[in-house]
Image (cartoon, rainbow, N blue to C red; front, side):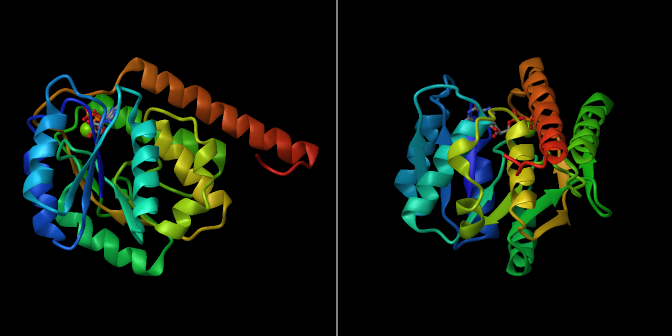
Length: 239
Ligand SMILES: Nc1nc2c(ncn2[C@@H]2O[C@H](COP(=O)(O)OP(=O)(O)OP(=O)(O)O)[C@@H](O)[C@H]2O)c(=O)[nH]1
Ligand SMILES: [Mg+2]
């Protein structure tokens, strides 16, 4: 379980303990970008008490994508067979993890999904739902990937799937990182399954969502879509 953190001091303890309770055999890696609020120090205390908790201290804030890439590398090097993405703020519920892991038995990648039947969001302001649904629809149409929730960040990967995605070429930083991985998985022919989840708006700490993140997602998704269409027209292989 890789949990990226930036200023999640109030959230990190409860989320780690919920993960440990829900899937006791899982190991947790906290990938902290030198949070000014001391999240990294709390993570170290958790790791000292529990041999299933590990910490990756990174130099400074480089975005969610970079933290995940470093976490994936760590997990693959350590020899884990399954790697899971999950936010620290409680939006993804560790109690739903067993369902994701069960679905992974018949899939290469499992996406926790807000926008399939049975999935939902709790306490989300209308404008966030609009951005998220709109982002998913735009990505689905432009990239031609048949995924309802393409921006979500509660996901379980088989190790072999991650190894087949070409992670060394991933440059996405914000939440378009999630779109990037999903489109790569579909292009590589992996079996991607969406499992409904209940996404709960964060109660503590501040959002890292920003206009920069939305702008990055818009331009990258548009560039990928236009690029793959141009390649098709020219008869070239997709990049
Ligand atoms: N290491 C690291 N983690 C980050 C960074 N940006 C965000 N995160 C973490 O990534 C997860 C998702 O970020 P959020 O701020 O919750 O983003 P969001 O869910 O789109 O926004 P909210 O709905 O407002 O919570 C959280 O666990 C954050 O702490 C970053 O630059 N570095
Ligand atoms: Mg969040």
